[in-house]
Amino acid sequence: MSRQTQAIIHADAIISNFSRLTSLAVSSKTMAVIKADAYGHGAVNVAHILKDHASCFAVALLEEARLLRNNNITAPIVVLEGPHQAQECAQAKHLNCILVVHNRQQLQWLKQLPKAVRPTVWLKVDSGMHRLGFACHEVGAIVNEFGEFFDNNTVLVTHLACADDVDNAFTAQQIAAFADVVRQTQFPVSIANSPATVGWPQSHGDWNRIGLAMFGSEPLSRGGSSVALAPAMTLGASVIAVRKVKKGESVGYGQNWYAPRDSIIATVGIGYADGYPRHCPNGTPVWVNGLRVPLVGRVSMDMITIDVTEVKKIACGDAVELWGANICIDEIAKWAGTISYELMTRVSPRVPRIVVPDFER
Ligand SMILES: *Cc1c(COP(=O)(O)O)cnc(C)c1O
Image 1: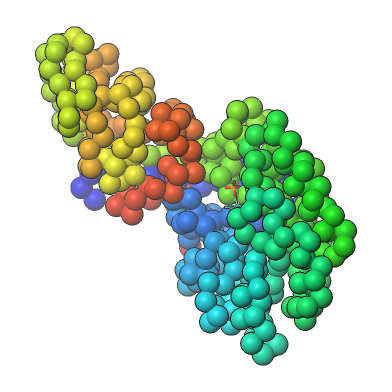
Image 2: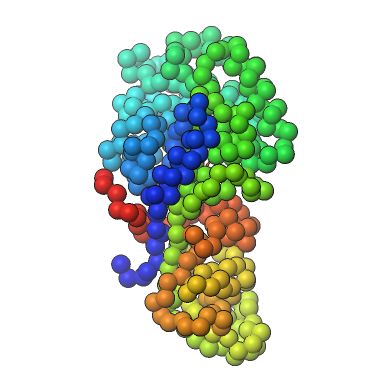
């Protein structure tokens, strides 16, 4: 490894976050959502870290489940988008996956399968988000028409559009609309994602689905979660050059920043090709040698520049934290005009993931 650029994945943080979140909903079971390579933390890593803690995992796509199976993960896996192709239905059974079915096409594909190779099917209900699922008023008819797929393993699933905003009345509306459907069908239910698990106890169901908060990011948009979460990722890099610039000189592409005084500039070996957001403006905090210092100049593909004039000692090789225990990923997301979900999932494959402590596979 040439550069010091890496994402440290803190196994103990993932385990303690998961157990704290599950303790918020003691009468629910919890599936660990590890789609999109476990939000950038490494799905195989995280599944192994949680092996003795999570009884069930969820992913978006069947190929994400296949990767886990190929790496000795045996717990049930819920495929949140269901099949995208007819052949994925039989593959799901073979891979011991549960398919969340959200449209008629998927039910038709399943119907063509011999009973023996049909996977367990859960049913997605659109309670108001209007992205995936059967409308509340359709569910009764679907359950009748396709009754052969549904048994006591079936779960009714819905997803909340605004759970991160604890003041938004739409969440209660969605929960009420869904409750009507549930009364008709009597299946177990799954409603809550991370923000709902933390902020909406009335959304806790038989199964909660936790992704983001497990990685230590604040799930409520205004903050204030009562549960203490630890960051699961430290995105780190190192200083690769140090120079002096005179007052009035510019730094980086487009002369986006001019030194307001004689300054010391450190160049750090991480850029937007590694997933550090190019939208971070001048002033975005970076942690080096015990101090928060500002990003100055545009983010390049492989490098950033920071103003280290206030840092007492700086040298090539010094460690830099882009986010982690000292710089909260939620803060960087705000500077970049996005959310922590996007920052985590965009850490690129060029950045090695280093799990600490080293976990047995
Ligand atoms: C991604 C996803 C989740 C997890 O959401 P978080 O907010 O990350 O906890 C839950 N349910 C569904 C349907 C999802 O797609």
